[in-house]
Amino acid sequence: MIAIYVSACFGELVSMFPNAGGVYEYAKRAYGHFPSFMIGWMTWLVANITACLMVIAAMGYLVPLLNKLIVFALAEPLKTQALQLIASKSFDLVFSAIIILIFNYIAFKGIDASATLLVFFAVVTIGVILAVILPGAADVQMENFDLLFAASPLMIAVSLFFIMETFFGWESVTFLAEETKDAEKVIPISLVVTTTIVTLLGLVVAFVMLGIFPVDQLSGMATPFENIASRFYSSAITDIILAGVVISLFGSAAGGVISSPRLILALARDKLFINRLSDIHPVYQTPHKAILFQTIVTIIVIIIGFGAYKIILQLLVPMALIMYISVLLTVPILRWKHPDMKRPFRVPFGKIGPILIAIVYGLTIYSWLIDAPGNLQIFRLIISFIGFGIPIYLLLLFHYDPDVVVRLNDVFAYMSLFFERLLVPARVMREIFGHLGSLKGKSVLEFGCGVGTITTELVKRVGPEGMVYATDLSAKSVKIAERRTNRIGLNNVKFIHDIHQVNRVHHEIPQVDYIVSVGMLGYIQDINKVLWEMHRILPEGGRIFFVDYIDLFKIIPNVSWLSHHDHLKALFRAAGYSVKVEKVKGFMWNYLFVYGIKTSEKVPFV
Image (cartoon, rainbow, N blue to C red; front, side, top):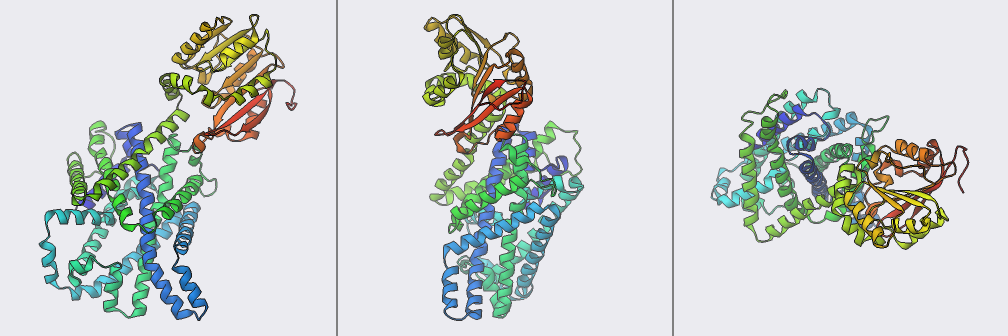
């Protein structure tokens, strides 16, 4: 009943927001930006861990089947060589990677191909279950249940903890809502109906297995479906059923593999993930870059997790339950925040029911925690995995959101001062001033002066007859830079705090001979407008030199228009500049140099 009710909660949410983000979208509407990212991050972790878990379980059934096939079909010495091959961990990893590649290729081909694959897996799964429960129902021994009912409440709660994984996966369906016709009507009914069918089948399978094998015997079985099938079928038929089990387990992995790129798509659209992963393929209308990224990550997770089924299961269940608690609570929150919003599907008792289920899930986690001392350590590991999303969120926010850039620049102004020789090392300073040449008597705009790292050197080089105009979007950074120049008696500089610098050149800036900018280019929101405003204040032949940080920590994505040198050159050319673009390698990031002159002629800059 809990599983069916949770499916109805998801049904109400997807009927309100039939978008690709699924649980991320619901959390965004209920909790706000940061919590929704953390829930999306958690959901993405759950999807990858689930795929890993299902693949490991499938390989546990597949390898013995292949052993039998090789013994039957091959002669020596090929038989020995083949048996040695499939006994190796490398075989498991390579075969699993191939399966993941196939699933993702089908996901890339579009929703119709994906739906066909998932329907096939569903049919096979139901066939396998029926093949076991139909003959097994007649062999049930009711006395086997006596030991089960004698178990302590704690033991039952812990058992429930591990069984819950069977009913996970509602979120995967919601990710496909944007590509589903009449999703707000179709998906809620589908969720409730399929969960009801799965629940009934799960109960019957559990009843048959516990009725045939005593619980203490069943708990020690590595492949219970094989044990039960061999009681009623020949060896050949049993192997066919086990092949169906393998297909079913791979199918469970396929659901998350196919759907989770849509979660990445939603996060990327909101600039809470790699921006380029929001691209849609022009032919297949699928998030092809997100699918490629997901493929790589899933294979890496499988490589890391192979051979640790129980640990992975212990990681998955609490993390998934935390995620489901967060999502369930969005139902009453959204009932309160948006009471009049259209809900084509409404879950009964929507203001109190989800809260009660969340409490049950919380108590289940607590029962597992106190069951064994080592569980607390695993829970700490789960919290650390979830918590790793916080620095990722901050880095992405800092990279993409100009308002956050302003606030963080103020907060970390003194830190920037402390690490300025790391941020702008001596070799970068030499490159800047080497390309600019003599500045004596010239006027210079420093667009984004920061804490004055190069401002003092600029002021010294232009001399008393020259002038430096230093602008920055951080008030605190401007004050620090101003104090630094005042301390050494330099007064041929004008500082301007401009909170709108991401979109303009300040109106008080007069004609200048040079424009220099360090670390500001990637934050500009309207690059064409800013370049033309710079063009207006420069004379013909006036020089520009931009330095920006790219490939941050070798993993944070660049602003899209900074990623392609030819496109960047064309952008500057269209604004009336001839430039060179160079990438210089650094330790924790790389540097992008864009330098050249203002010219009305289409000539290369050398």
